[in-house]
Image (cartoon, rainbow, N blue to C red; front, side, top):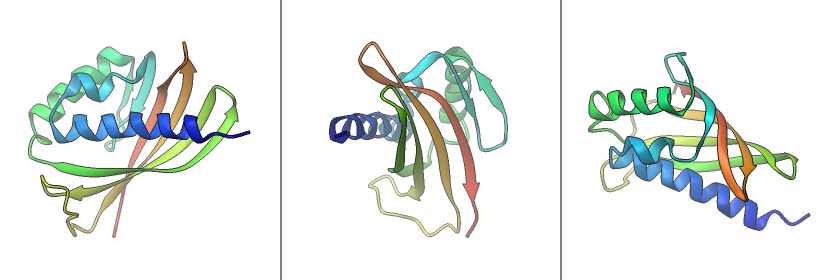
Length: 132
């Protein structure tokens, strides 16, 4: 089965999330999540529901992450069925113009995507900081 269009759609979701992070836009950051989606952040906190994720995004992007920038890349994608996929997203710290920074750490996230009403949405995300 050709998944070219699906993978392109997943890349667009990740691109929007990258744009949201780099422009401090909490609404765009959570826009692709399902209403009842979950996220575990790098500190191990479970955020249940889009509203909880939005509140955390507002606090983070308006506070300690305000002057942080990252480049995101969709990694491996596995389709569990036609409307469910899991994938890794790799992140690297960058300057505002996208130049990678050598800060000795990066982040990898596991995403669970579901197709709802023809659009790919994030049902769950787990972030993990990765050491040098």
